Structures are given as C-alpha cells and as structure tokens.
Image (tube, rainbow, N blue to C red; front, side, top):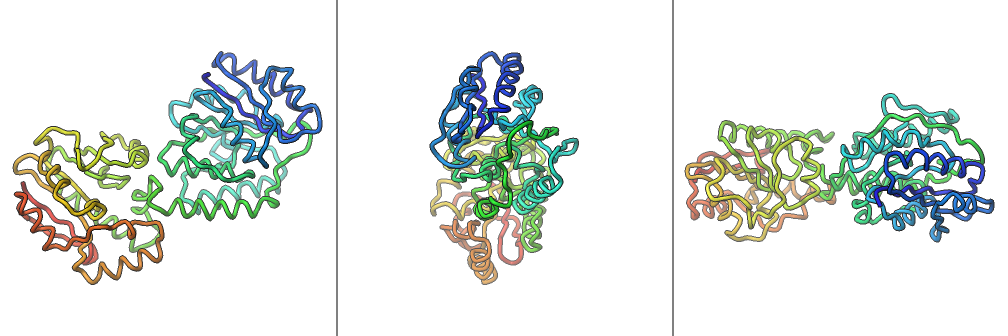
Length: 417
C-alpha cells in the first residue's frame, strides 16, 4: 500500500460523503494504491454508513479524543505514507497533490495556515487563539515552523511507531511534530488556505483543552532542552543564555582555527555541533543517528559508526577532531588507538574535554547540572585533567603542540602524530 488516508470523524454525516468522493477522485490520480480509513469517535448520525458505502474502512474508536483517533488510525494504516485530514471539508483534497509532490523533501509535510502565503477562513477569536498557540509552542520550543497545530499532514509512516505518543486531545499534533523534530526528521510547511467547515459543529475547543496543551508543552520543553533532541548542540550556538552562547562560539573558533588548512578532517562524535560545518574538508561520524539526520542538511559527508570501530582506512585523514566525546566513554586506550590509526603520520589531533583539575569547571558543572537538567552534565563518566590526558596521548605516540582553554574550564589540546 502506497498511501493511507486517516480521517478522525465525529457526526460528520453532512460532510463525509462529499469528502470521500473527492478523495477518490484526487488520490487515484497520484497513487492507485491507497486506502481511506475513517476513525469514528462515536457518531450518532450516519457517518459510518456513508463512509462504508463509499469504500472507506471504518474503525470504531476505542480510546478517547482526537489524539486517540489519530493513534488508532496510525496503527491501522498499511501505507508507506499516511495522510491525515479533518472530516469537515476544511482541508480541501485538491491540495493533496502539492503535498504528495513535496514528500521527497521532508518526512512530514504540513499544510500550513500560518506560513507565508497561507491563510484561514475562521472566526477572528479562533484565528487569534490558533496563532497564539502556535507562537507559544514554536518560540518556546525553538522550532523554525509556523503552524504545528495543523492536522492536514503527510507522514512517512515508518517514523511514527518510534514516537511513543501519549496525548489524547488535539495537542497530539504538537507532540508529533516536536518528537519528530527532536529525532532529526525534516518537516516542510506548504502554504495552505484553510476553509470553514461546510456543515455541522466544530469539535475544536482550544480553551477547553488548555490544560492538555500546558502539560504537553511542559513535556516537550523538557525534551527540547535535553541531549535527546537532535539539534541540542546546534541550538546552543545561538543560545539565549550568554555564557552558553559564548562557550559554544569560543570552542568553535579555537577548533576551526586549529584545523584550518589541515586538509581532510574527521570530526569524531560530531553530533549536531557547528564545528563540522566550519571544517573546510570535514567528514562527520557519530553513533547517534538522530544527530546525523539533523546535520545532513549542511551537505557534509556523514557516517553512522562507533569511535571504537571507525570505518576508514589507516592513515586516511590529515586531521582528527574529537570535541566533548571522551568524557562520555569508559577509561581506556581503544578510542585513542582508533584515532591514531586513521590519522596520517604528522597529522594533527585536536582533543577537547573538561579539565577536572580546574576548580572553575567543577563549579560550572554543578550549576549546569542544576539549571540544565537533561543536559550533558550527568553524562560525564571519565574525568580527565590536562596532565592525565597528555600523559595518555604521549604514551601512544602523540606530541603536544598547543593548549587552549574556554573559560579556564574546557581544555582544547592540539597534538601531532
């Protein structure tokens, strides 16, 4: 099955026949392999009868709310892609070909009312509340999007089972977008004109669902500000916190200056840091696929692999960068031996890690752990000092050349093989 169309519906007898008929006319032209799934939330009119008569698969919803309907629709869908839209004719099927055409550009395509060129025919108060809701979520969660409450979307179905969705009301729309973005998936908005429902009564009550939205925002805020978010490192570069922003940019400048002109450079544990982007001839390697998904948009070669088994030939690189990685690994020689192996003779190793001999760092780490729960502070399992790291690397045939510090706390050391 190429495409599954999921329609949550409740008492939509006045609209569902026209909608499903239009869907058959439009979708058959872009993909002959499709199914229409109507998830009925307990209609007391003839919504289910009309849908079945028009060859739609009808599921009687077991869970509660709009969120429950979407989750049951996702579970039932067999398509490689899943399209969701409302059953009230506010989402015109005529717009589906544009969404289908954009499916190669992102894993989620959103028909956006608030993106430039988009619009909505709805009561002024509801339109204002919609804009406010989206502004709070997108600004508060640092999302470069305009309309994350639109239910008119096209998903690549393979990404949905890994989201562990918990919302049961309309806030599931925000939860899906935030969790997908946190996993590094791409989201594309296409300007769309939202129509008023053609018949029946609206089921959207923004104020009534306010508590659900607040709870979801709190959960998503924790996710977005944890290392589980794929763009965590990239966002820190532009952080609203002056010290964090300075720290990231100072680290970036030191490392990219040391690597400038070095030739081919491997960034081990690149994450979503801007450092890889600033390397002239850089290749990134990381064990976390979500980080690589996010940073792929910058056009650098990327490899999903472990520092313990770098998939490169011996003497492959002129320079190796390893910034803020080794403190997350158990003490041992194996990672350093791998970096030695792939580095050419005379090549440069740039190593960055906190200096645990620094009283400044010990204070900063305590503050970081307190005010940035979910950050990296709790992830440090091996604590190096300058002397212990230099001794370790010199024992493996590296010669120390330069020493730099960020805020007297993070050491960045340059060695030659």
